[in-house]
Length: 166
Image (tube, rainbow, N blue to C red; front, side):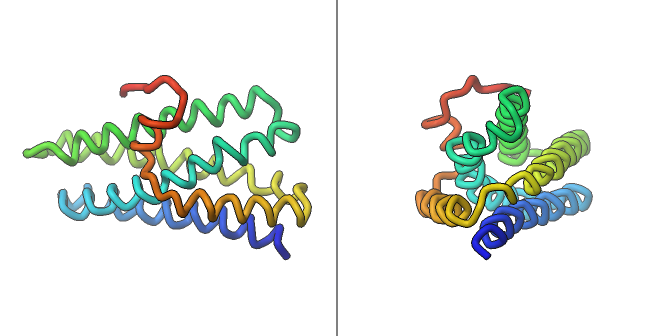
């Protein structure tokens, strides 16, 4: 039961973020800066604890299953996610947005959606964790959520990785 609860919670995070990305894409297509910015702020706030959990806890647990090369790739994928979020913030906080800005936003959002799809592929590997570990991971995930630091703030203040710029 706990295994399924943990995986379900983890997947629900992905669904929530995917829905925000789709809302932002729709807002970009409609040139609705206000809605795109609101969804981006919500995504940044929500993604912080999720990505922190993955990097500080989950990736260590998956290392024996996935290997160091794939775990390194997951960290690198996160580097690009954070860079894309930073770029989206730059775009949507500018005073004036032209057609190319919205088009760039859509491309960035599509890349973020692809990363979520790929991250979802690790879920079957988590079924091997067992009930005790899954329950502990669910508790830790919820503890990290309570810290509520957004993705970009966490990346700048606590994450010990070089910042990419795109």
